[in-house]
Image (tube, rainbow, N blue to C red; front, side, top):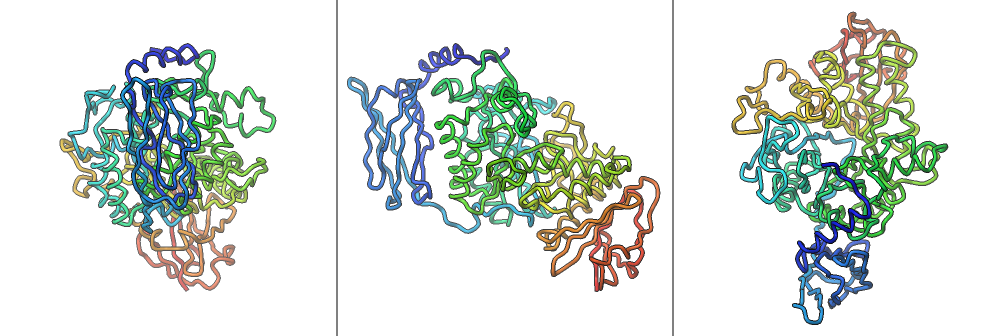
Length: 617
């Protein structure tokens, strides 16, 4: 059935929902903490005709500042102020109405967890592993399906159905990721997505405060984060500000018509970043970009609404304080209200100064990526306070270097030209760099399943500036083309009890898969032990004869990276032009093969190969 939203739609759903909800269905956030930087807290209260009731509460250090009634009588928004002197404890919030049964909610304020390994941030010292929990491993078959949820059962033969992967499955394989050298795990959203179809991806949230039961519970998610921290692993949480699933309780019974962006008829976003970045763009294009819906099953949140702002911001702060996650990835960042997102970032960073944040910006132009980043470096006119982005421009440049034809600004020169624009960023080291993800063709397929190109690209990724990210299965040559996207979201073989092979083990992988795994692991482990690759400077040289050379260096080490883009012939590279970086060095070690190059005046680079050399005095 086609989904359309209008004022009539709002009124009909309000009437239907009123008959179904209880007198006091929920209060969110369900609990909070004392000692937060921001003393203000807004509770959203949902219950049948709850606005007809009076509200009373009393607790030392907590003031009920205002009771907000909105269009829908099933809602109240309570403005509280929690003083710095307030102590942890519980108090009663009473909702009274003459002639009706009194309603009470026991609200709890907790002490903040000040453990040093919580909200610690993800930096260029880390290597991220992105996975889709539904497609990685099924560790608890008992939570595969629930009778009260709209999508029933698991169907692994369907790319759009649930496959049964969960948080326990991921926890069971943390040792695999640790062995690979991964330091940070990013799951696509694990919050509830109770949509009737294709809800496995996680980007149509229906309950912001609840882990999807098919993945586990809030407590299990917290245990997962704690286990990661105990193993020296960090956790990124994937957030969706822009939209919510149309079956979510705040959408089926909206607090007000302006909770989401309303149109006379269903209107998609135009999906054009230029409508936001272009100083010559008309307001109509900009409005459609920002306010148009991403999908019929994804209601576009009205982030200029202060109630929506409070709801989303508090939810994200709640998850960090509750579970201790180390960073946020922000989905569809350019589609959000820019003023709100800047305010959001400041409020989140005020509570968690070390928490890292990067936004999804999938654009092939450096200037368009820099437009959305903090510092007002491209004269946007205000500071977004967004530290980093998903560096799609660099991803496209690496792909062009591997697959493109040599020209003035094509082939390997595209990579050089792209990095030469790093001046547009306040700090490019905060960008998340990658070769593929869940929304695009897998890297191994992008290079035509050419193993030499695969290795060359991996070497560039893992020696480049920024925060490198792998997509699950990259390390074992998983392939797939993103048309449709389900083809790049296959199950990780071995993650299900009845799988015939187990790619988590060397015995279950083919000889070629093991070669890929060991190659990637060698590069990651070297990066993890080499500050020059983590935080060192980058110097790149103009490519010549299809050969591209760059250096990563600090006071401890100098690493020379050489890529030969020729698909047929090896090249002998005379190194005298690199004297600025190579002066004083006599030999080099190939960090993949551990071979010593006793003469580095001339270096031979095979076709379609990236050499990673540690220079020695």
